[in-house]
Image 1 (cartoon, helix red, strand yellow):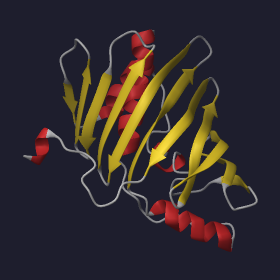
Image 2 (cartoon, rainbow, N blue to C red; image 1 turned 180 degrees about the vertical axis):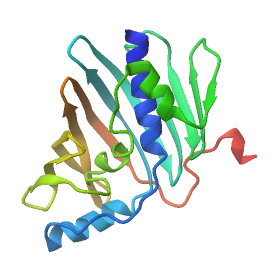
Image 3 (cartoon, rainbow, N blue to C red; image 1 turned 90 degrees about the vertical axis):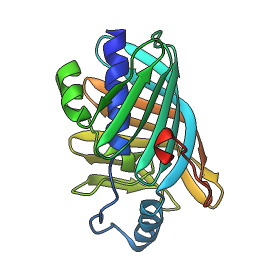
Image 4 (cartoon, helix red, strand yellow; image 1 turned 135 degrees about the vertical axis):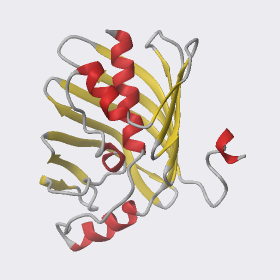
Length: 209
């Protein structure tokens, strides 16, 4: 069960990283429209933090480092899964997953692998947007905002998303604690420490050569 939980988390993050940034539907108010546009345009970032995955039977926690450079990404997980550190490198059409002590797995279709392992769907296409503090493209319900047009909560694709903390990082205000849930699954990302790099390369892999 512990190994299955780690794999499901890994695939969730991998799939989220692959998504491009299409147009988002009409905003709720002018202040939110401006903020939403700014967050949509953030395509390069890095953060470290912690992640907890809980269902009706188990809970697992890990540390996370996520680097996103437009369509390329690198995600590192380490901590209490007890199956070794995990690194994911990829871009659309190519994903390489490597766990400590295991042979790398390379795939171009992690969606099918995810469903085979856990037997139900996860919000894989939406997470890349949700972690930045915006809904994914498509219909979202019950949006509520703080005093400075920061999104506090909404519902989308049957999931409840709550932003429980924001902090200023450079010129932007980004989430530091997010809860995403649809019974029986709950995903908590917390203590997120963001960095928005300049023009220097963020990810350097063997594919650069």
